[in-house]
Image (cartoon, rainbow, N blue to C red):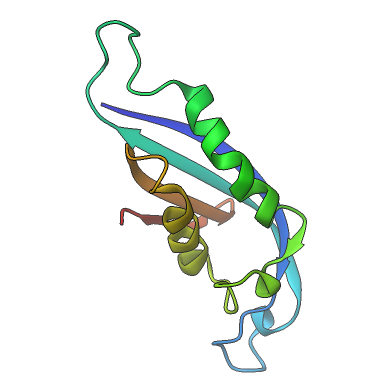
Length: 117
């Protein structure tokens, strides 16, 4: 079964891999939606795939590192596309959140990415 928690990150960025005339080459910001999906069997004792509080605790330091930051200044996010952001979050969470199966980033109401490691 899959279970998920959603979070938001407000951050600025400038994409470095696009032509200078591209609008995203300029400094801009988003309120990113981050959906973390964990997968596994339902524990018969707790009734959970994983306690949502565990996901929230695991995400707290990642949120602190990214929220209200200029993402280009975060080591490993020098070109902070949504794709790179999803991979960065995965790499920081997967060691402590073994049930993590997907990181979804939504940067606008209609655009986003899903990374499954």
